[in-house]
Each structure stands twice: as structure tokens, then as C-alpha cells.
Amino acid sequence: MAARRIASSLLSSSRSRSVSSSFLASSVLRGASAVLRGFSTATAIEEPIHPPVQVQYTQLLINGKFVDSASGKTFPTLDPRTGEVIAHVAEGDVEDINRAVVAARKAFDEGPWPKMTGYERSRILNRFADLIEKHNDEIAALETWDNGKPYEQAAQAEVPMLARLIRYYAGWADKIHGLIVPADGPHHVQVLHEPIGVAGQIIPWNFPLLMFAWKVGPALACGNTIVLKTAEQTPLSALYVSKLFHEAGLPDGVLNVISGFGPTAGAALASHMDVDKLAFTGSTDTGKIVLGLAARSNLKPVTLELGGKSPFIIMDDADIDQAVELAHFALFFNQGQCCCAGSRTFVHERVYDEFVEKAKARALKRIVGDPFKKGVEQGPQIDEEQFNKILRYIKYGVDSGATLVTGGDRIGSKGYYIQPTIFSDVHDKMKIAQDEIFGPVQSILKFRDLDEVIHRANATRYGLAAGVFTNNLDTANTLMRALRVGTVWINCFDVFDAAVPFGGYKMSGNGREKGIDSLKNYLQIKAVVTPLKNPAWL
Image 1: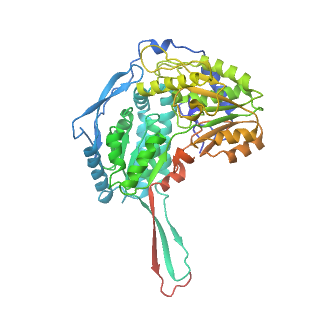
Image 2: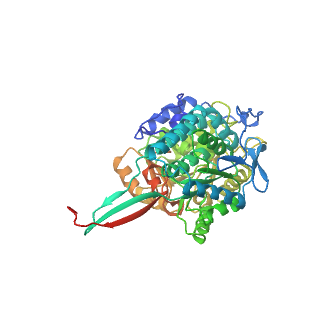
């Protein structure tokens, strides 16, 4: 199948546009030029556009029903454009996690889902994808309202990708099978691939819908049941689409959704003795806590997709205009709130000064404003905590001696908007070159030769992704093998396809999301050995 690229979808008038996964950056850059019309901060301080959607679901989803939390508590989910309350959402806690796990366990042990044929499960998954496509605009509006990402990004790329991911796993549901293994003797050996049971899943706030699909899709295709905890910043879209899932015919108890906070609901899920598998996407520090809770409870297996500080390497043979555009996208996409963002831009010394000047010009043209406004490229950061963290890192950059090329301040007095910011003269030991900022801050570093940049690119605790921009095939081949990361994008960036595995080396996590490899996260392997009497063959 063709790869669906977030960038190309955003830069095209077609909602369903797909392109080959082998396309080069130049095709994206030509499309990009049509929407780059000049930097504007005015929209950030205008009266916010009223979202074209109503909030319908704010309760916990347990055993197929929306219910209040056991404590009756709620918490506000906020509009990042203003900091004002969108809705009050049920606050799940230990008791709610227990109720959800009980429902999921009963659905797994006694319900129809794991006993259905794979084909029957696939039909429900495909009906769910149909409903996603039918309600595309409402889902996208909720995602933008709760998260702050541009509506065009959500509606034209992320919601269609959600449907595509669900269809991908629907396709796998009736193709999961075991093996017959020859033995050194008269025995019949079967290797069975069984659903693992109750899966606990914790998703982040930066891509709520896509992370929902990455987690829920493979788990359900394999016949498991789920307790999913949403990020407290962005609970609304997962609740909405989970309702659609039940309209598609998902049995009660198979998918349970809890909104709540990490130290309470998240910790209860990670440490629950009746959860058979845990999957978490978030920061590396929180991932360590999650892994510890899982180990100290029932040693449940854990898949972790964690932080990154990805190098984006620009060689001296690169087309600088294209490299600038692609590096800009690699860092600033989604307000810079990407685990795989190309946040260390390594530029060869022979083209460094030219690159910095053109990168500055591009940043000044970036359109920042209300994410519901057509043509806006960058909305607000997710919340006040992240907003303040990014501004602290900008101060670290200035104080450490890096050159502030452009940006560095907030936009307006309301909401969490930050200017696209660029630092040059950045050195490896600076905090802005070591830590995951998770915001619109580009650090540009200079290098001399290939051996040097390989060493420096790998000199990090992270290993999630990397970008390489070169016209030399030998250089590309050298880098793709030398970089200690889970994904290397060559002359492109953020190319995501349902079939392509995603995950990291080192402290960027373990296990893989998407593709055939993600199914392994949700299957147990059982060997069954039976004696053979007088076999005709072995």
C-alpha cells in the first residue's frame, strides 16, 4: 500500500492524498511553498474561533457504558488557545481502574471477543473505520480544541490516518496463526499464538488519536481486551471515538477508557495484578516509573515508546533550500511536540552560514495563530506547564552562550503561543542540545566531516529517530547503518505508514509500534507437544 505522510496530506488540498513511501523531500517541498505566505502573530491575539463541535462524552467508559468516577470527582480540560475550561471530565482513580480491569477480565475470560473468528473481529474494526471517516470533521475539531494542533492537520492527515491504521489491523485479524514445528523424534509440535489477555495502555497528549490507534489496533486484532488511560490534557477525542467503536459492534468490556492522572490512575493501571500486558507512550522519566511499577507487581511485559533528541544531518552536497524546508518541518511540526522531532540540526560547516540565514527567514514566515483558522501552521503549546518549560529552555540557550537567531518569546498575552525559535552556535554539552524540549526550538550545530557527525549524533541517551539529507548514496548508506536509532529518514522526515515499525534504541524505549512487529506485543507463544505413534513421516 502507499504510505500516508502527514506532511504531504497537510500540504495538499486532497484529504485522502497518499504518496509512495519512497518519494523524496523535493516533492513535499514544492507542495509546501503554496501555503507559506508570511509570519503572522495577529491570529494568536484575536478572539478565538468557536469550534464546530459539541463535547458529548466526559464520563469514564467502563463495560460499554459511560459512568461517573467512583469518587464523583471531575477535572477541567482546557483550551490551549486561551487556558479556559472546555469541559469537566470524570477523574478516574484506583477504584475506577479496578472496575475497568474487572470488566476487561470478564470480557476476555467469558465474552465473545477472543472467541470470535479473526474475520468477525476484522469486520467490526472495519465498521469502526467507516464511522471514523463519517465523523472525520467532528473528531478533528475535538482534537484541535483539546490539543491546540492545527485543524487542517487533524482533519486532513491525522483522522484519516487513524482510519487507515484501524483498517490495517483489521486486515491482520484473520491472518494471525501459529506454526507446526518438526521435532527430532516422534512428536507433533504446535506453536500457538494466543491473545495475551487484558492489556493496559497509557497514551500521551501530543497525538491522542494516532496513539489510540497504535495501541488499540494491534491489541484488538489479536483478540485482547483493553483498559486505556488517556492523557489528562487531552481526554475528549478518545472518549468520542470509543463510543463510535461500540456503535460498530464492539462487545461491552472489550475497550474501557479511563481519564485521569498519572500518579493515580496511571500508577494503578501499571501496577495492577490482573493486567497481563502494559504499553506506554510518554517521557523517558515516566517510562522508568511505569516499568518499575510493572516489575514490582506481576512482572507484566511492557512496551515503551519514549523520548528522543533526534539528529537531522545536512551534508554539504544538499540542496540548501530543500534542506531548510525539511529541517523546519522536522522540528516545528505539531508545535515541536513530537518525540521524534529533528531537534538537533547538524549542518556541514561549508553550508552552515547559508543554512542559518535561510532557516531564520523560514521561521519568520511561519504562520502562528488560532489552529482553527485556515492556513495556520502552528497553534499553541498544550498547556501552561509545557509553555513555561519551553521558555525556560530558551533562557538556558541564551545563558549558555548559544546565539538566539530569531524568536525566543511568547506571542500575545492569552493562551500558550510561542514564537518559532532558532539557536545557532549550539554545542553538544548545552542543555538545549541534550534535553528533549518538546517545543518550537531549533538548535543548529556545525560539523566538519562524516566520522565526526556520526559520533556526535550517537552521543545521546536517546535513539528514537534521525534524518539524513544528502545527494550521495554512499553517504546515506553509511549513515543509515551507523546511526543508533529505530528509524532513519533519508531525504524525508516523519513518513509514517501503518506497516512501518516505530520505536527506539537506548532510553527511547523498547518494543515496536505499528507493522507486524506490533502484533508480537499482544500475543503469547505456547508450545504444544504430542507423541506420535507409528508416524508415516516426521
